Image (cartoon, rainbow, N blue to C red; front, side, top):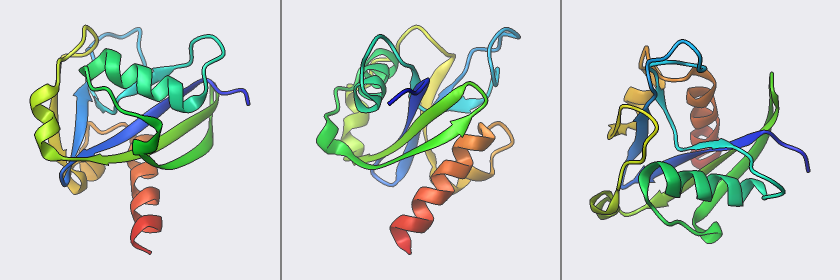
Length: 135
């Protein structure tokens, strides 16, 4: 299946791992709080894409079995995948921040979804996931 990229709502304990994007005018959503993920490379699957990007961006090795939810949606640049995973809060001690973005933090999911600097379509995907998970 063709797709342009994938993102991951990674919950460490009850909080969401978020990455502050670089503040550059040549990228989408500059200086916003983003989620791990990015563009597809080669013929990788959506799961391989999001797991590779998560490792590159925050140094965490996750496995396909950790992905508990997946949805494909249409974006202006094509189809994109959105995943969710829940891991223990202690995993934060293993985070090694990569070379993209200004930093990372754990944020309560409600705070992210209402934050002025949350990437809007990602906040919407999180809301959809939580409503289906809790519904």
